[in-house]
Amino acid sequence: MKRLATWGLVIAAAFTFLAGCSGPAKSTAGEGKKLVIGIDDKFAPMGFRDEKNEIVGFDIDYAKAAAEKMGKEAQFQPIDWKTKESELNSGRIDLIWNGYTITDERKGKVLFTKPYLKNAQVVVTLAKSNLTKLDDLANKTVGLQSLSSAADALNDNPIKSKIKTVTEYSDNVLALSDLKIGRVDAVVIDEVVIKYYMAKEKDAFKLLGESLAPEEYGIGVKKGNDALLQQLQKALDELNKDGTAAKISQKWFGEDKVLK
Image (cartoon, rainbow, N blue to C red):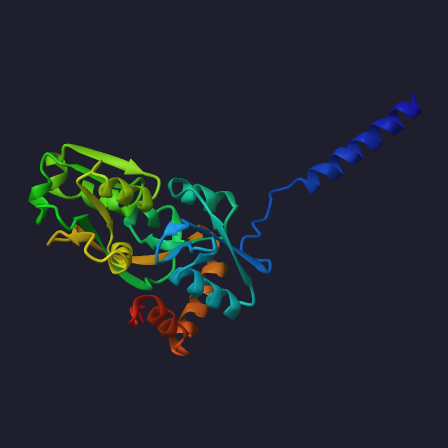
């Protein structure tokens, strides 16, 4: 009987020890030397793959410089943009940083840095198209990236109710490819992105005369991780002060577009 009682105490102690070890997990996002950054790797010129399949872009250079200021190494993780907030909240990535538009809805899901770049949602069509203004989209087929701020901007505009079909794509590259072959009549897209493609493919595209919505880019941090947000914002402020941000902007845009 004593032996059974002894074994009972041993087992109880073991369970007590295991319970203590399996307490609430502490978030380690941003605490190590690696800073895992979730990106859409088809979002030129912010973050995309070059001809050597290397990830490059304005946000890539900007993130590397910020990580260095923070004493960390930036590690870029291509993600499905539709699940970006889920990736962040699960801890698989530390930051969302790739032309990530600040919206009221997203503010309810993540913490944001201060805005660092202005943008707008615009409508692009082929240069030879007879479309010139938003009203011309009536009874047309329009493409856009799914679960993006392009979708939000279109939904908030009265023209949405007049459009025949809205086709959603996983990325802007696919949307523009379908525009070229006539599967859609126009594409709602970030101004920063389409101006990059228009510079590369001269006389291929044109913008409608009216934009849908002005917006600003920020960097998303997991709710509750205020320490990482403050550390990151401090690094960004330093990049502005020492001129590094301006140099990166000149490299990718030909001018200093970074918000101070």
